[in-house]
Length: 371
Image (cartoon, rainbow, N blue to C red; front, side, top):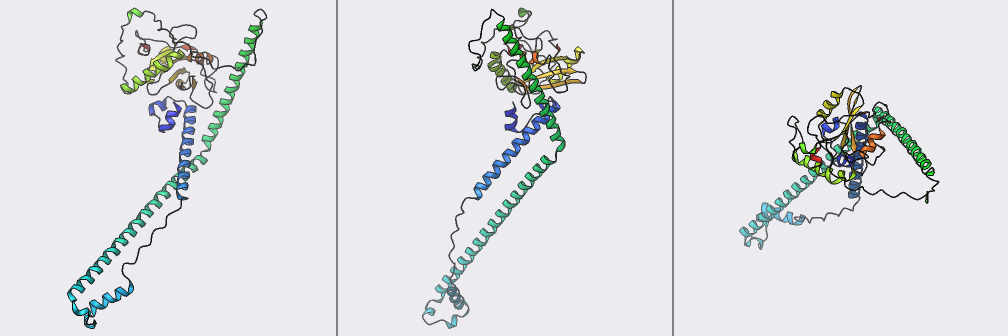
């Protein structure tokens, strides 16, 4: 998801509105880095082009020799002084001389026009280079002068470092408890404690989800008529195909220990509808995870005492983590939810996932994902 945004250097305004302030600052930093990287590549290419040897332009021969010009002028202005041999055919000689003069004048005009065109082209290139240079200087200047943003970035990095240390401590505690439990099972010893862990295999494709009353639902449920979608049908079909091909094998949306859909999971849901569901509970700590309607990923919507907040979840590397720098990755969505039931999402420590916000309509909004 982050690679797609940086390659296009564009993010949808509605998608940007779903980001928290911390995620907006991190995304702005990444787009700044990509902009400066592209500028450096363009500058290096221009320097390589300028360093190539320039072929010398061949010199043009003189149109008319000086002595020839003197002879022509003498023939035109003083025909009476011509020798007898030249007066034999005055009409043909005069026509040839006039034709030569006309050809010479035309060549001189063409050469002057070519020189003028080259000078104008060179001037335009210099103006373009000057504009690009001024724009680059302005970008660098704004980058250096933005001290407030730099301070905010340092705070964000400090919060990420604290979160990583807490996650590391939790993993060490879990590992210690696991080793203690294994030692208590009849004194069995580990055969290879220093063995490098292999990459876990993908779990098998889970069966169809078990709904409360499968026979009561039609095979092709009608869409919610009160929900107005702003995305095209082709984009929504791509998201549904992505979920079925890449996310279902990872048990996305399922409970951790069973083949039923988790109560906090929703299908393609708009930001407005998610806010309505959370506000209807009236309990801070309520949350849901929904499939994003604009990009391949998920969004976690949370109700706190300050109102509704939304966090994007990146699922592009066979793992799930919040959009940001060095975020903790989880194997499944259920693992992410379990972890943040005790650990807050941000450094402020107010976003705990306490109460799952389930379905309120008769037809669940995730049916189209599991058909």
